[in-house]
Length: 234
Image 1: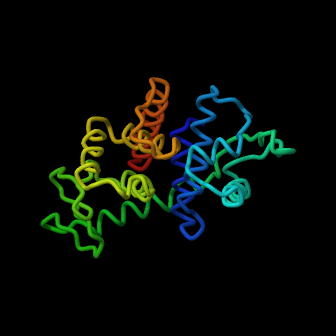
Image 2: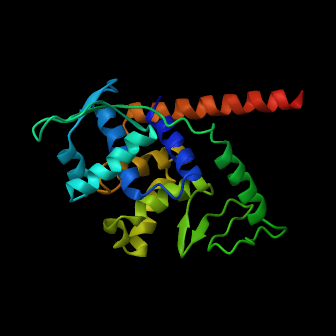
């Protein structure tokens, strides 16, 4: 699976299990994806605890181990060989948790869109959010988001919950969004996910390989959607 497909599977599962997931789980998992990518997508690879802790800002070893082990239990990370001492690293492999094809999330997004838009295009929801039919940006607490999908908002919410980003001014956050707006939505989401995986150290640009992976995944998704629509017409 590509990094984009892994992230989609992760957020599908997160949507179905909101009581379990935390930003720490997300940070550890996406740093594991980033580390695996830098190693050329090895089937199994070393994942040093101290390196990961420094990258994502977790200070206590016990805290990291707790969230890491839960990711292993849930099936996102496969433990190939456990660290034997402080000088050796866990050897892991990445695999999808295989949610139920994302149907629950897809259905919720469709229902959410129907509830949000009335005859004037104004939101009827108590959430501080407005969706219109004229491609204007979503507004959330005074911050304009350039894309109208829940996928984008969910990753943005994880990005800005980290202290380094929470301290940013509204103008600084808006500037980051203007940068993301220059790209397609899947690429913008990929940039935010890479930023999270790299410890929230500013916006990270995607390399050519990562962009190709995302574009290929999007192309496959659109082909599948067209095939499904064609089948439904029959």
